[in-house]
Length: 85
Image (cartoon, rainbow, N blue to C red; front, side, top):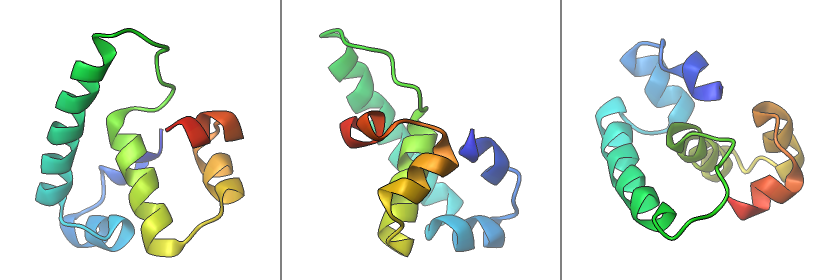
């Protein structure tokens, strides 16, 4: 979703958008993916957002202090799904 739009940016634009270097972002994604895999062994509902989108959403929130309303509109998810992430 949003990450698909961002991944085509060059390194400088990516850093300006996410607040981190692409290599740091990729390391964070691998750590979160492993944690998510372990958590999903127990079962649960499939998430609407990919790990990349969840991380990008979190970084945007921390960087810009965006409201839940704006984040929800950007990522096309309900407020309940946003709080659960």
